[in-house]
Image 1 (cartoon, helix red, strand yellow):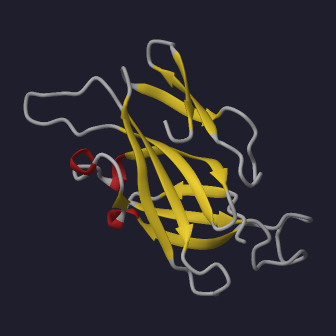
Image 2: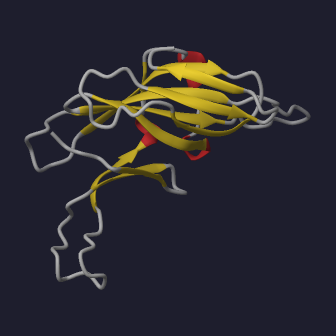
Length: 165
């Protein structure tokens, strides 16, 4: 089982997954007692699978994802939600964001070689633009927990999202 502590979206559309207990041991850090995280995997989000919203997700660009948040984990997979702003087309701007739920799975958790699948499991249009998304209940590393998130819209409304819609 891999314990991922941080997700970082990079400007090239890739996702960096960081884990604690990295390769730098105590004493090698400039700060006593601090162990920096290590890179567990780099994932190219351009090669995502999709089980819902096939036509809507074709235009989804990984560089447009923001506020990636882990909401659930079970062994060798993580459920992540993110906000996605549709790109404006000529003379047409969108006044809404989409919520994207993705499942990130390790194909072979015992191997040192990182092999990861990313599947979009939910794609939902929100009522307006979203300001931020955060975990709603503490589901940190609790196998079988149903994850949820709280989304703040630009008009001040709060929405609760539960895994699976």
